[in-house]
Structure formats: structure tokens, C-alpha cells
Image 1 (cartoon, one colour):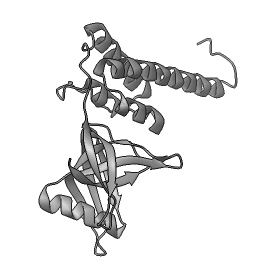
Image 2 (cartoon, helix red, strand yellow):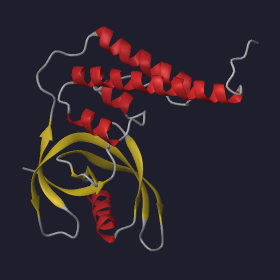
Image 3 (tube, helix red, strand yellow):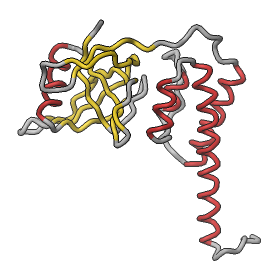
Image 4 (tube, one colour):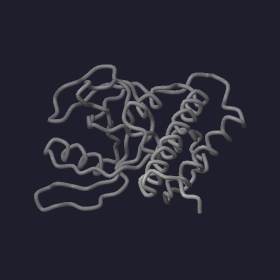
Length: 204
């Protein structure tokens, strides 16, 4: 059973997602330096006031943006396979654990309609938010993660997606989240327009 170094953070890293990290604690500088030198992955795991989660994502350090004289680093990590904690281990300055890979269950794939719905809602949200975000092509084999990595749904929603073991279930959950995001952007726009019009509707 593989053992990896863990990097607990108030962050959910999805497979395919890239995020910048500022690495400043000596123990995590050691972990990241070893991963760079040996081409190994580290485990990113959500940890917040509610505790440490059991399912996280292996991460590869794909870019070093800056190394400061005191050893601090700005790096970019990319989410790879998911894992589940089996047993914490000891002996290093940073947290380590034996982990097992989390894979999807043998279930039917999403339908063309479900894929189309998720893509349509994603495009609608991007257009309404006037965001410069590209639409993924799904080449990773997990369109749900590719789409979700481009929207800030919050930690709980992202962790929920991470733990689902069905691409079809993830796309269905994602569609609900995207619908909620579209509705929230619509409400925010209406509030701004109402405020601009002093509470009155413009007749043109």
C-alpha cells in the first residue's frame, strides 16, 4: 500500500485542476522539494474547522513560479488521482499516510443529454458572469471534474463532488450546482439594476 506525504489545506483540489500554492512552513517546503527532486506526488487533503477529510487528491508540482531567499516557494500543483486515507504514518516532519486509490464504480456512463445539460449550464454561467473561462473538451475522461474546476462552488460542494464515485452522479450534481450559480448571478444582476434605477424599472 503506497505511502505519500500529505499537505492538509483549507482547499479542495479536483482531478485536472491547477492551483497556485504559497509554501512557507519548513515541513511543507521539505515535502515539495522532495517531490520536485524525485518526481513524486503529494496528497492534498481538505482540513478546516470541521476536521480533516478522508478523501483527497494526489497532486503533481507542475511549475515553480518563484523561490524566495528564505526558502519559501510559489508553485503550481495539478490534481491527479483521488485517494482515501487508510492509516497515518510517522517518521517525517510532515504528515504521511498509507492511502488507497479511489476509483469510480462500474456504473452506466452519463447520457448525451446529461452531458449536454452540464455544458449548456456552464456556458450560460460563464456568459452571464462575463468571465474569461475556456470550456473543457472532456479529454481527461471526467468532464465533471474539468467543469467543476473552473467554478468556485465552495469547499463543501467541491468535496462532495470529489467523493462521488460515478461520473454520471457527478454530472447530475454539477448540473444542480450550476443551476444554483446561474440563479445567484441572475439575482445579483437584478439587484444591481434595481439599485441603479433607484428601485424603478426603466421604460427605455
